[in-house]
Length: 425
Image (cartoon, rainbow, N blue to C red; front, side, top):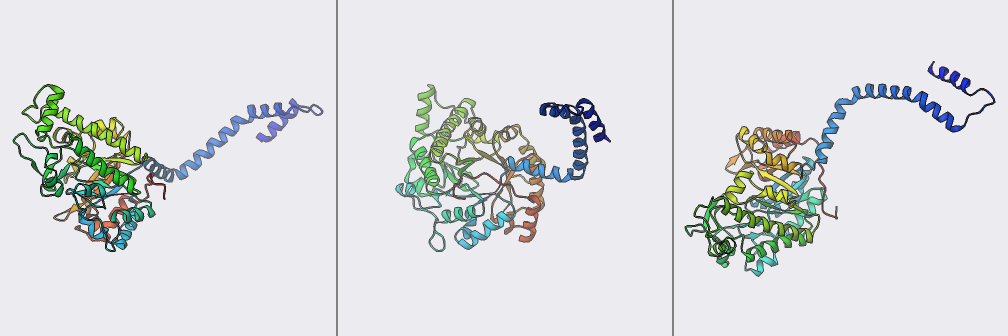
């Protein structure tokens, strides 16, 4: 009926023998038919939208998380070396991670004062490689990178021990002048890694050594970045060695306060570490511009006040490309409180942000139920998840490997693709 109506109107406007211009016809139909077409289009959209809205909402959610570069990672530690030594086991591991929709691996390369790859930098300092050869004499790190990239997994080597080293390591024994101390003159503290000493992060020789190790990894391997955790710092009790005392006097005209928690003394040392991290970032980016500069600290109040690690300032200075905050809590309320802090909300507006979750230890297994509840809390806040550590994902666990893997499949039912910095895949 509508078509007949407009046909009659057209004839009255343009009688036989008076052929209209093309522009007149176009303008006429746009003016008269456009409202009708818009109404028809709206009706069709409404009907189809009601039919497909559940699917659309789900797919939109998936796209939103992918566009956020959701991190789904796992740390590979010294405890996992039995896997890393064998090419076949590495292939099996990375295939399993890909099938369960993980996207990032963080393999340890610096632990206990030793590197886990053939290092000319370490050897020049009289430090022999700890472990770097596989079962057939191959380079463990190179093999992991190759196999992970074939499965589209990112590899970001983990500089685990930072400025920390065991007192019996060749590094500590050969370079005693590099060590810092507490006010009482003692040089050790107790950490998760046992009794350790701390390299003085303010000494140029220490900064050069650490920088050269990092640049060696970034330059010699097809890695996607480098990661520093809570040990790229200094416990607040330290910094009373003669070198640091003299530097503080030179810059402030004062002696360091007797109270290691003094706000100005904390800030001075934290700022020095920040300055080093800024320069380190510049060096890494100069060597590989799209390398991911990853940081995995403790929650901010603890990190800054007790470890002199001002990571929130690092984020604001744009030297951090991703952040994974370690929150190893058994109580869900305490866990939720830490991941809901303002500094996490601020950080995730700028860069991919994830939470480090404890998957278990050999002497302290973690149930899949606890892991699932923490991952759900993380996902509700739009954050990623990185698990400590690989072996405890499904091998060293209270449930069977098949139950654990099914649990992770439910947590990550769809892929979350991350952008890679490597040109080779």
